[in-house]
Length: 525
Image (cartoon, rainbow, N blue to C red; front, top):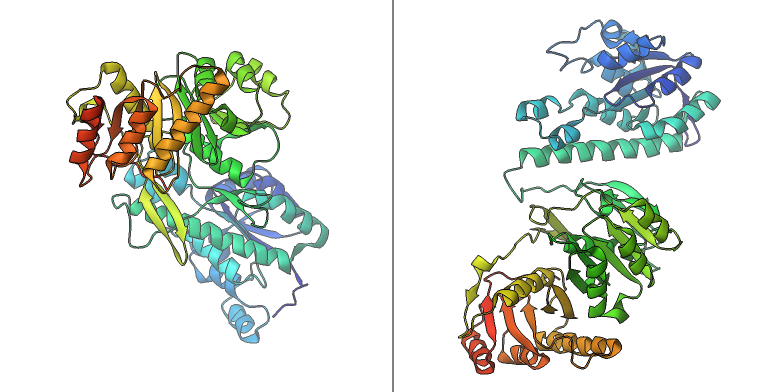
């Protein structure tokens, strides 16, 4: 067994890469130290074309590539050279008896299976991009890390080049770290393949999650917690966004920004969402982003201070100037004009994220929540209600304008923590009650906040006067509906399904308001 400080000299390297980024620099560093380079196919051609001495694996093993290249490194001369222990006389004797030369460095990155699937390739092409020899080489080298170094990502090359140039090999600590990264890569690769084969099954018997670390965060939800941010797919949003300016994003920033962007993506018209602590505190749609911002802000200007702002259109100068007028932590949008970026650049601590697109709110997906000893997985809430889905249960039917606002409010409800009550008027929220243990409390809190916002704006009546109201789940008693009516709502949308629906409908009829059932609940915990 080697000592932890041991550095194993690299005398022979095997290179077989799909992604050839940085390949020539690495190979030149190896050649400069007199390392014999073994390679295959396209990698060998790239090296030879650059004038770097390279030996084909088939020449080294005496066994040709067969089956259209499916078998080229799966031979004892290669795997014996990687797996043989240098500290066991029996291994050395067997290697000598079979003319197996040791291999000290394995450089492999895998066939681009994930990219092939993402490009919508045929099933045949996807299968052909399942690497077999590559993972076997990587695992073998990682297992024998006491004597062999393994590189699986071009990002690892610069540090390896420096170590090889200085010392002729990589130290033990580096080999251990690279072995861990190697197994993480093959695990993620196998997870992607397993998910592809199980694509007709939402929840397979064994679900494996993988992600690429994008950022180690300063701390978690609270300063005594540690945290990191991982990217898992290419859904447009926080994980794919470019940060144009501002200080590093925190755990809470990322969580809140995701909540805001997923909400604003629900709307086809220009829309703005303001989020505080993962709950919308103002949502509006309008003909312009600037107008939508002003209407969203009016819902709860106090909570908006220090909030997260999401837009579903590229930011223009007018919208940027209005948003920048108050303290905002993060702005996320599909894009921003140069003028808008210049305006926001004056706010040095403001983070600006540009995504290049919007997530499809109707697309399927899996959401995961950790539990002690396991995790829950569920499909994304991509449910959407249209006017045709409504069942009018009261004597008075809602007007066309009320129906538009009811549908808008119910869309917002989907993004508010339960129990959720949302008041809306003319395409903007005017009161939001979130996360209460009692639905009637949510209704009252939303009405109280609306009244406070009206006072701030110098209005004579609460913002909820002549509004509509949405509830994410049914009213279990008439008292919640009565609180909504007292706030000034003239129409209500709710899933229905309570054993006391008749009592609730009677209360609505007694007050002369309209009520529609959706048959769909939007709990968000």
